[in-house]
Image 1: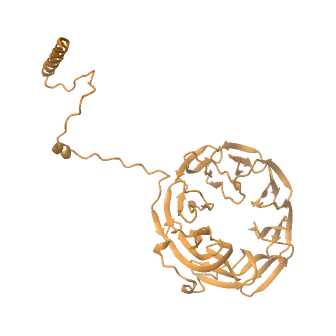
Image 2: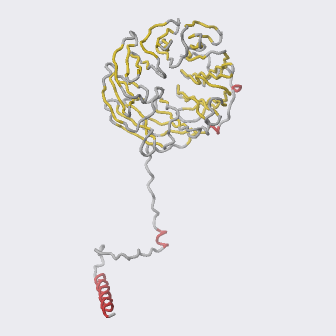
Image 3: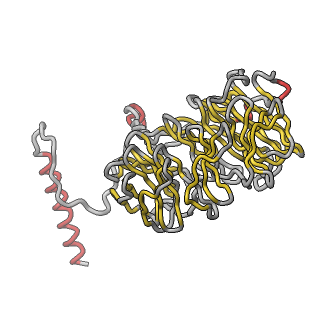
Length: 437
C-alpha cells in the first residue's frame, strides 16, 4: 500500500511539472515536441458545429484509363423493328434461287458459287443465266478474289481462276488439309503445312522459303517488310523475303486455342495488336507491340466477360469486339489508344455474324435462345461506327443460314436458306443497283 501511495505521488508530481512547463512556453510557439505518447490517449473531442463549418473534403476523380468501361450508347430495344415490306427495292432487294451456294459477289448481279457434284460457276441472278462453269470443285471454303483472280481449292489443290473466263490461271503445290487457309498477299501466298510455314511466289508458284514453327495460335498479318503470327505462346516477326526471324517475344498469356480462322494479330501504323485470354487476374488483355522491335507499347485490361466469342473486326480507327457469351454481353468499340468509345447492347440476341464496311458495322443477330443459333428469327442490325447508334434493325426471317454475310463498298449480301435459298441485297444509301466494285 505504501508503495502504491509513493507511486501515485510521483505520477502527480510529473503531471504538475508538465503543466508548469507547458504554461512557460512563449505565446508564439507553434510546436511542442513530444517523444512518448501514452497508448491510452484518446482523440480530442470535436465540436460538431465547428466540424460542419469546415469545407468538405473533395475526393479526386480517378483518371480515366483505357480499361474503363464506356457507357452503353444504344440498345436494340430502343428501336422499332422493320420488315422487308418497309423498304423499296432500291434499299432492300430479294432474289430467289434454287440449290446454289454462292460464295462471292463480282458485281451488281453476278455471283461466283459452288454446287456440289456440279462444280464452280458464275451466274447472273436477275437473268438466271449461267455464264461459265468449271467442274471438279466441291466447296468454296476459303475462296478469295485478289486482282480479278479467284483463289480456291480444286480437289484439295489450290488454284487461281480467271473470274471472267472461268479458266485455271495457276496451280500451286498446296493441298488442303483440314481447315487450311491460304493467305493471299500481293507477291506471296503463305500456307501452314503442319509444322512448316511455306511462302510461294504468287506468279510462278515456286517455293521461296520455309519457316518451321510449333503450334499456330493465330492468323497471319503483314506490314511492309514482315509477317506476324503467334505460336506456342510467342509472338513472331519474320522477314517477308527470307522467312528469317526478326524478333520473338514470349507472351505467356496469349491465345491458347489453335485456329487458322482467328484474325489476330492486327497491324496498324507500325504496331501489332494481340490479345490474351489467360491473364493471371482473370482478365482479357489487349496488347500493343512495336512492329519493328517487339517492345510492348501499351496494354489494357478488360472485364473477364471479354472472352471473345467472335473475333474482333479492325477498322481504320479501332477494333469492334463482341463480349457475347451465350447471349449476354455488349458490342464494344475500342480505338487504337485502347480507349472504349461506345457500347451497344444487343439485349441478349445471339450474334451470328458481323462485318465492317465503309463506316458501318453490319450484324446478323438472332432472337433465338443461346445454343439455338441454327434456326432463329434473324435480323440485320446496322451500326454507325462513329456513334454506336443503330441506323436500322430489320427482321429478315427464320431459317438456316449459310455464308450469312458479305459486304463490299457499302453494299451487303445476305443469304438465308428457307427451303429455297433467298438472297438479299441491302444498301443503306438506297442504291442497290450500283456495282459492288
